[in-house]
Image (spheres, rainbow, N blue to C red):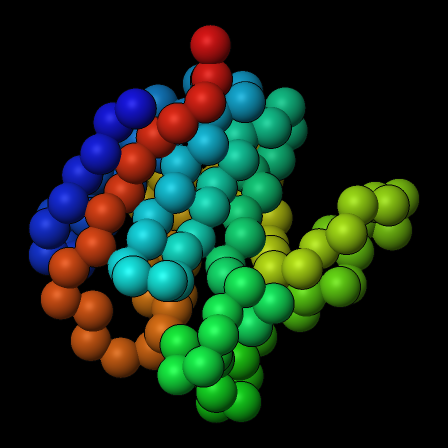
Length: 133
């Protein structure tokens, strides 16, 4: 497992390295976390699937406000419980979104860093890679 910890720009740099590597390794999972909040990316055959934590997994003061949820939707995340594809039968308890595998990695990194759940300054966090072969 690879872990990058630090300020947001350091996390973005580490995430960029992991996304570039993941674009060639199907089955890799990258997780970015700040406290109870996380974004996970799964590199699949033709898409990059991502999840951002929802209130299903958050308790008390960590729960997302209505404004934070609207911000995720404005950043093109899909609401929990809505399928990622009309053929998908999987439960989606988190916010989620897809990128085509050919999406330039800087665009993916920008989108994930912009998510920064919850909205607002995030002084530190971690990006790590797990899974794979």
